[in-house]
Image (cartoon, rainbow, N blue to C red):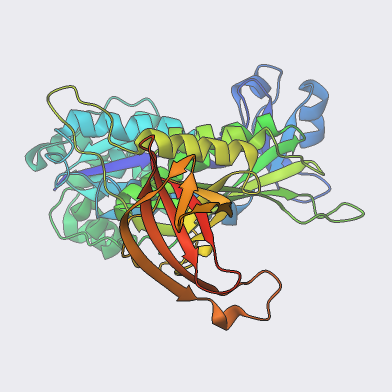
Length: 496
């Protein structure tokens, strides 16, 4: 087994920075409401004099335009769960940690083309999510975290891909990387101990008696001398994520960056489940502290076929945002998936080939639907009715009509062009005419139905015999003879 520790240093700050364009001074604060203190600040804030531990009022006096964000532990936990659901696409064994995740990658390397390509895919995906992570490989999960911590703190430590090299590689590192409590760390420092190697050199019975068997067991797990079972993450059945915006947003274009972060997370979630989606919903949340609280502004996307490509979804969202009006400034953006469906990826080919039939049309339909809205884009849907004029209807192109009933095929061919209303035909010598006398080719096909709709304003029962006919010019027509008074012949459609 090979474990990859993904460490997110200064996680509260990263959660704020991933929702806004670079360059803004940001500080994370916590403490009493009257005197909050800075716990993290980004480079833009530090360049203006703000530092961790400084009072917020003093930092605001130094850093012009400083954005202060209150730390929220619940927000960090939700972000880590979302990250774990995203990481599930790379491995079925994911562990949530206080500031990152552990991923067992040994079983996935062959699937992704080797350790290097898998590591690049994970790092590129983290960049799309807006995270700056430190990675550490080791054959033991405890050692992987120590390697990531060492690399984050600029200690020289290679990835540990061989269990036999764990002790030699970890021995020079400071024992503070083990993250034991302050009392234990102070006692070890008082004894003149500084490195993990110093701890391993101590007699085991004396060490256990002085510092407890838990510390000794932790060292054994570090060196893979004993089993280290991990609490595996189980992804949820549905996707729901949210990004808090560090500053109020009034322009829909500014929502694209946090939306792209959410869509990248959604793509990983869907890949982990082998699924796609045909409908997703964004919620732009407004401040509840306004005099008149506003409900969230809803932004929906509908697709013709299951999709999970974040770039494709972002392009559709960009079209939709151009026609979205924000009634109030936005303080957070949330995304949830309404429908999950099995996803069938396109098969690759060694030779160039034409696009899959229907793909371009579907993408055009999705783009028009996103740009113009459901109320302006329609598609035709078959209806289970024998009357030709009522055998179809126009429905909004939401690509999911909610009606899965199979519509039986007509017993005879139907013309491509159906007239809005049947056109009366003159008759000569008992033969209908359309520019020339008609020759009946096939028929009759009798259609008698609709009596159950009598009494409704627009309904009409029909009693007709339909024929396929041809005139002297070679035109193929669909005509019928009315069986009820005043009878007569009518043209109802033309074949191509």
